Image (cartoon, rainbow, N blue to C red; front, side, top):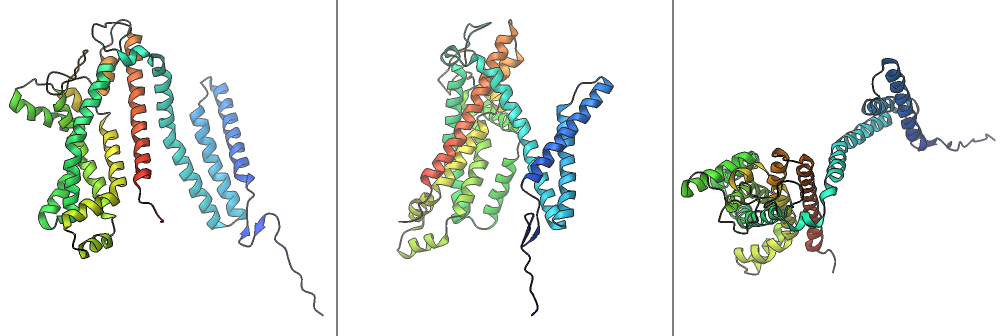
Length: 360
């Protein structure tokens, strides 16, 4: 009889072919980084220059990509080598993009946490020329201006998106879509100049009011609300609309009772992200609302301070001692970052709460 030999796969291979062990990429990465750091240490010692951590890390990562691609090509084949190379490039791009974000967060927290005290949150800058003072008037101004901009932008943006999805046809709808696209890309300073010119026509030059700042922010918010709401409304299945029409429900009531409740999670998320996008704008508020050291609760009377403008004025107009002004600027910047993070987290929670439930 003829004997039949059955070969069992070895530890480093599978039915798909040979594979590198799971530890090989990590060991290769560690060896590449160690070699790059040693090389840069020798070069810095020979030349007398300082050691470059960034340069050594980049050279180590490039060396890792070269070595792991070569090893994979020799053991696993060309397709798997290309896959490992692309994976390394994408991962490196992600880490590179995270570097400035982490650096900004560490810098702002390290410099701003010193003034995160009770006085900063319960006092204004009225009659304060040196140390002390706070940003209560800027917090109130930011809250009022952003709230007014939201009240202006959300109804206009939502109704525009409803028109484009449910009613808009022909040249008028295309024109509105084009104008929304143009408004999405306009610089924020242009929105501020527009709002200032609009109010200067009626109240004279030099006018500074909180409501003018709200109008400027609404110019920036409206296209974001229109675009996000339009995409959410288009995701609503047409079968739901047709079922409502078959029952004799009017179109406006179908939109109000079927379309909007189905897409409310995405619409709310888009609105929250639009608010987070404009709450940190400085240029339009500097032109329209101005800056002041006193509290102002009236949007329609006199100047109104906001947190972005507060950061700018504290940094640009440093007095004596200078460190007090810088500490207040960093603290306000940290507060702005926390507000934006809270808005993004709230948007995610709202999207989860209002998302249509699957199942009975």
